[in-house]
Image (cartoon, rainbow, N blue to C red):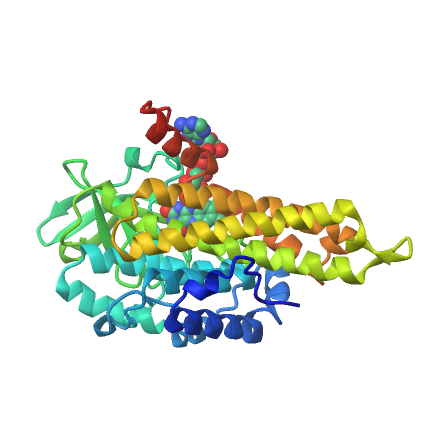
Length: 388
Ligand SMILES: Cc1cc2nc3c(=O)[nH]c(=O)nc-3n(C[C@H](O)[C@H](O)[C@H](O)COP(=O)(O)OP(=O)(O)OC[C@H]3O[C@@H](n4cnc5c(N)ncnc54)[C@H](O)[C@@H]3O)c2cc1C
């Protein structure tokens, strides 16, 4: 099977370093993720043994300076890494992305130098695993209305509230949570999960998407934390949204990975599967599906590449990131469904990765801003009317 769907030779625009990172990640996924991920997915288990290995290929904090454990890589390299990880499985990309885009980025951007030095190197090696807590049971698409709050008491803060749908909730050593202070200003707080008091975590059982990634709840009941754990330079909910921008950028590239994996699987199958005495790929109806797929993947790749360039230049805005996230997830959803159909009955088995990716996309459609919220962000931008 070709591992390089690149109809417009976009690779010719990549630097040597970008290609190196993409290929190293691809090789790692082929060797460590693809052989066993179906079993983990079926059993709803996380391949935790891969966390340290993921760190060894730069999976945590690639974009940050070496001083903090990163390699100072650019955003296209980061995007290509997300693309390749998600070709393996969303759960693998999401471990890398929560750590890099949401937890490390928050500390790097809004933490003090002391907080950076204390946490970033350990997060980059995987010694510490992070979670990002923004969503609450009653506040998903509108997190700014959140109810969780804290009050100061001497050199401590007391937190009350809960965070829902949190990746790594039960396993994280560090939970980067967003909570309102006494003036109702949202601040980022680094929770060391083994030090906080009156704090519980649970994991959601029986979910059908992101099965190899644990999702759960963080519950605070008069929980005590040192005041020094508040991110020193965090000033509003906009800071959380800035982290989400990097997360959404990762999803936009990851979706290309899913779409490519599904398309290449369907293409190969269409050449091998014989019905009515000829390969199914020789039928016009199948060719139409495959043509649409490769065209949509090419458009999404170009979108990612240009967005990556804008990110590198510090010129990308949240609306552009929002558009890429929405478009590419929807594109991957359509391609996964069509690929599954091309595989016929085999498409619903775990012999092929398509159904697993199709199920994972249901989460991509909803998290990091739902498809509808992103539609409304673009709608607001182009019309000037806020329909959210
Ligand atoms: C597997 C998984 C992992 C997650 N991981 C994390 C995590 O690590 N950290 C974290 O903080 N959160 C996480 N989330 C939460 C995720 O970000 C939320 O689920 C998402 O923001 C949507 O919130 P909701 O589920 O409460 O849906 P709701 O906000 O209740 O929305 C329900 C439906 O209503 C629509 N809707 C809402 N408002 C409008 C409107 N104004 N106009 C039109 N339609 C609207 C939505 O698009 C959606 O279709 C995760 C979610 C999942 C499923």
